[in-house]
Image (cartoon, rainbow, N blue to C red; front, side):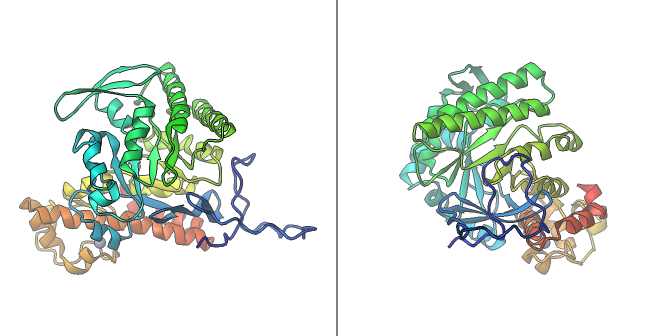
Length: 420
Ligand SMILES: [Zn+2]
């Protein structure tokens, strides 16, 4: 079912990391027939087109292909808050995230496993990704002790103490059974001293090596995670360490990474700081594997990251802001608590094609939000998810048509771009 790519997928880490320009002249006729593009196969990436650094790709999982650029709704506790799986399907959600830290603590991995795995437990048949929980352990300030071997932490639910090694974490994520598992890593906060970030890079690389060795499930992809904070040299060192770990693993007949997360951004720095290095980091990753920028969901930041060559994103921002009464729109953010919407019987966002905008007025949505009715948060969540999923779908169409730069410049020149 793999499509013939418009361009052959570049092999891992071309010298410049840059795709060929769209209008490059035809190559000389080879002396023997060219090798047909290999079927992408499970966890293969088909690079369908590039436009500048922006990419349109197709990543194959056992629960369907993920078409990128793509935004992945966050379902931390095996639920995207307020949105049933059939609604997610209607929205075109490409992947749903869940979190191993939270599911390990509640309801417990044995419960999910007894239900038949995470897909069956939450009634979602599309692609799933579990985050390792490393970010939660280190960001919730309940970390007890960290050393090369593993990390101790306290439950945010009942204060009980736990300890994970990378092997423990791989066991947990394999039992959960998502299509994509993330390596256990340490995400440095911002700001942090360079020495701290450096140690986090080295620790995460060592854990990446052990995750590769411990991960045996063939119907689940394992992604490595690039750390290094805002330091380009540490980012590139992190990528080099991941490559070394992968080469050693493959020399022993084990697998490599099916893709890469880019972690440790969007941790409190100004967006401009991230973009000083993001493009070079993305370009240094293998062109033939997906690149996932973790924790980014602001519409303008999504498009800027696509412009730098990133494929996948997740963030609680669209869903969390919806529950607080704020809608994304083509003209910027709208706070439905604002009195100006009291008698506004127009659609939420005139440019939006989602069912919420087709069926409900701003006045009614404001009434729901002001009355703390749960339907208010649910409807705004549906709209905001549609907004970011549709934004990525349109970005993808623009890349496929070779007009992404114009699409991107039009967004950046719009009033909305300044409001996100
Ligand atoms: Zn809408």
